[in-house]
Length: 354
Ligand code: KG4
Ligand code: ZN
Image (cartoon, rainbow, N blue to C red):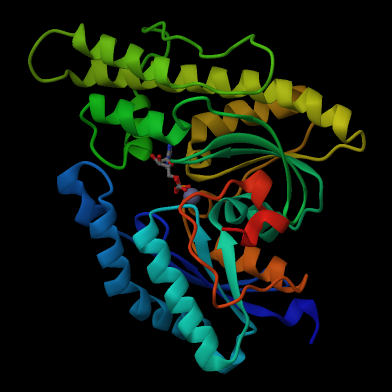
């Protein structure tokens, strides 16, 4: 069988999306089912791990059936079963990996435990078919990192957040603005009619050496701005202005850090490669536009997955599993789910450690 003919089932259950997808070695997405648990978590204003795990358990099997039906495939048509093995909420990861192991064992297929972050990191190879290396800005609910992607399992970290992840900052700012959960998309929407110049929020880390990020001061500044507003219900224009000012501060910070990373990337990889943005926050149009501008100014191509493949999905898990499968890197049924699993240490050798 050629690599192009490989078909892998992917399962994603590490947070509040239950997802199942089928992708092929020639980069076709045959099915990509995503079931959001937003309604289950909304009353709590955030993701409740226990609620998430139960919902994954209830929905995953029907969702896999649906993905198989959409693709018109039977289990015997598969070449491997991949599931997110971490990092993430452990209850959900257990549901996903146990389901994948069960399917793989029953059908005699290889099982692949995928690092969720590697799923985000390699998505652009599924969507755009690019080679290595590339510079990656990974921005999600739990992470904010700049990495040189040298190969499958080969990630060199240039910078990371010293406090909050950028998605977390969006979610917290949105909560302060009473925009509800999940915060990122709501805040982006609220910012549309806002004045990004009204509030002079701090631009964390700008001008500092290195490529690290910090967002907790920005969150505090948003809280102060909200507290200083007149008492009573928040006025829509104030919310819009704070949201736009926050987004603009985040964009300035990301662009500054990324510009520094571009210089390091150039030195490390003189032959160059594109700037890629991935992860849930990469769905933000303002940030995408600003990063595209930064890449353009540095003479780099800018690539971002389509919006639906930035936020959590199983196509990225199936694809990362497929990339590992064709390198012969499968996992044993003794794989233990990993609540923490750093990408730079993890891609390769370290991956199957405790
Ligand atoms: O990658 P992802 O779906 O899940 C994790 O792996 O964390 O990222 C989720 C994060 C959340 O913090 C969410 O608020 C943020 O991505 N997000 C956004 C947007 N869409 C999702 N942040 C800003 N603008 C958006 N449009
Ligand atoms: Zn994610």
